[in-house]
Amino acid sequence: MNKFINSINGVTSSSVVANFKKNNVLDFSLIAFDEGTTTAAVFTQNVFCAAPVIVAKNHLKNDIKAFIINTGNANAGTGEIGLKNAIDSCSMAAKSLGIKAEEVMPFSTGVIGQQLSMEKFEKGISDASKNLNENLSDLGQAILTTDLVEKKFSTSFNFHGKTVSITGFAKGSGMIRPNMATMLSFIFTDIEASQEDLQTCLLHSVEKSFNRITVDGDTSTNDACTLSATGKSGVNITDCLEEFQEAMDQVCLSLAQMIIKDGEGATKFIEVKVKGGETSQDCLEVAYSVAHSPLVKTAIFASDANWGRILAAVGRSNIKNLKISDVNISLNDTVLITHGEPDKNYTEEKGSSEMSKDTIVLSIDIGSTNHQETVWTCDFSYDYVKINAEYRT
Image 1 (cartoon, rainbow, N blue to C red):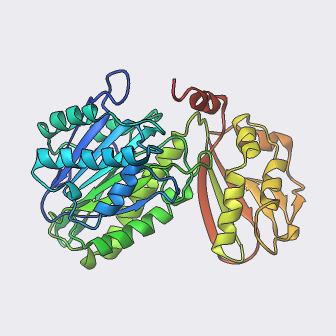
Image 2 (cartoon, helix red, strand yellow; image 1 turned 120 degrees about the vertical axis):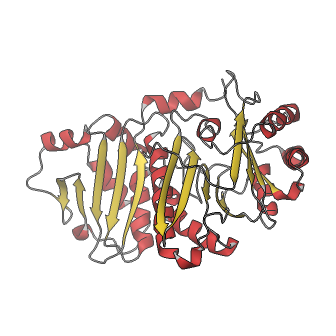
Image 3 (cartoon, rainbow, N blue to C red; image 1 turned 90 degrees about the vertical axis):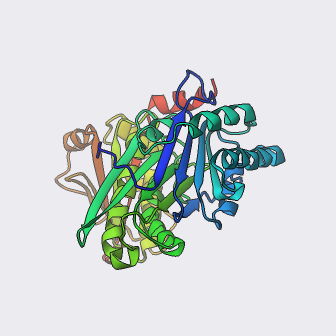
């Protein structure tokens, strides 16, 4: 992980204790942008999207000048009261910053079905607005819920003697299934760009990163991923589109993989690579069939070389024209299946040895085309059940 976090010219923030969460921890953040900043975003596809998602979507058509982010309460499943609270929180922030309410985007994460305390918002906004500064570091801690580690990444590149920087933060550990980007992520850059160009870049990066991860197959009500560009570098995105996209891809993939490595109760990082399908979607379908299988994930947790579970997950994938004779499966460098048959060189000892490793790559061939897709997931441990059984207590 890139531990050095670049500040972004034109972005200030402050994270404070507003008591949305217990234990006196950072749980509220205010982020302010200089005039001329553009913002793009993608949101959850869950029909029961949270009130802040509805408001953020509506406000995105304006010139966004601030974000407000609270943890500990998702403000989801809260009806008209929740929607009013999300709108009112934007008004509070706008008043403190001297901007319009519709220029503020709200984000919430935490327990579903509980109404927000507006007194806590008032405290958070009051305290944070007095301490805005260019140091973004506290944001990584303030947005966490069940996460055990902060997720942040910075990179930069030079273009004709000028430096373009990108810094991103994410939170996510459980309820992770990519129907957009199952988590919260905030990415900042000093490049100059239109909202349309930013949106195109963000969608490209999200599709191959946050939309390729799964912990438990659940899509949250509150997911959002934003990209804000201040223009302070003096470099326009149209002049260095390839370089910027490459850097954005690196930031998003790094953050996405951090989420998987910090999956609730996770002990192993799993990469599922599928190639040879008639379409890329076929490859993706097979990859998710394996990555979502509780039987595969528990076997990997136990270091049990029960490769029959992998074979079964491939076979039940919802794709047409899958032929047994086309299927090859490898566990790291150990071949399990060759042309649908158990590989003659496979031994239980080899399989158990590979299953015991912290990082596992499952390579699956389902045909001879050039289509390929990769999904990242983690194992299921006892702790996953414990964490989610006790989430509200």
